[in-house]
Length: 407
Ligand SMILES: Cc1cc2nc3c(=O)[nH]c(=O)nc-3n(C[C@H](O)[C@H](O)[C@H](O)COP(=O)(O)OP(=O)(O)OC[C@H]3O[C@@H](n4cnc5c(N)ncnc54)[C@H](O)[C@@H]3O)c2cc1C
Image (cartoon, rainbow, N blue to C red; front, side, top):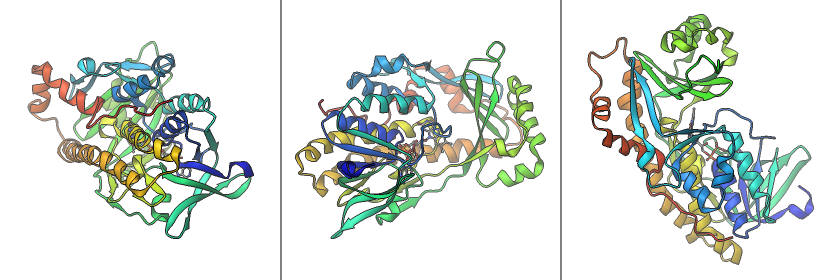
């Protein structure tokens, strides 16, 4: 950043789904906005890959849907899984009232690159990669900017509003004195890649449940991105059993991985993703607002975190673009964003907690398959209409937003 860039109307700390979408929408609405992303690129693979129908509707609202769907992606109309050897359908998106009734699987870096590229068309948009918001700047009890650390040094960036969109491990949030309440989560995720044989392997992205095991395999064309769910804190025990025992477990769970799992040579190739569910009781203070995972860290259950982060961004843009442009932003506007988005986030987290406790933990504790297919799975297979409910929860969620800011 040079001297000319050191003031802006809105500074967003964090270039994840929440930050880039808010930056795009504010710039589109004529607000001067600077997004700071501490990494040099979006190429990290632990973000989740799902873009849900609610987000496709948002993309249509801003005229980007066709261009987005021109990127390489997969479209998923049904969400299914292999439950103790039985192929089942759990959600059917085909009837959703959305711009497109399917879920898109796309590497998140492609989505963020796309949105950032589109945002750069607006003169008010600045994205600084490799720039970390290291501390908030306060004056007379109000947040008036952030310190920015980058390769070229440290400099203040003053802003009428700072938005913390810096994810579950937000440093801006505690620095500004906002406290997060941790709900706890009984699971963690092991994240690793295995080569995919495009000719021989199945195409299907989905989950596999076996006694004591849950594995999700995401088809990323040339490789499988695997998410192996474990009870929280149990990685050390797995490591003591050795990588060979882990490979055997994968092969026994998913036959199609039996050959490719041999390429997994050491624990260095397996990342531990700590699952966390938390929320802020207060999302804002004068001059500062938290959104996305910084306000409510989501579990991967349902793969809804990205879309909730985007919904927060849309609501924030709807409520704040006008006051930011006019220079009339007050605390009440920030409070209104929390009022609008806190309820959907908390309801979704409660559902995630219930699924973690009532479904995932019992599955991980089992040593043998149940004698009968679990009742909810049975009902979903017998009554296809019921599959619309999980589809609605996952695909659209609670209190969906529409873009109301102009261009
Ligand atoms: C294992 C796992 C799998 C998941 N899978 C899915 C899925 O498939 N689908 C789904 O919808 N959700 C998934 N989620 C949830 C999802 O990842 C989050 O809810 C979502 O990414 C939140 O978006 P965000 O923009 O708020 O934060 P993030 O995506 O965390 O983005 C925050 C950004 O801020 C940057 N940053 C951090 N600190 C600073 C700073 N001080 N200055 C500048 N930049 C900073 C980070 O580098 C990052 O780019 C998953 C979560 C986990 C744990």
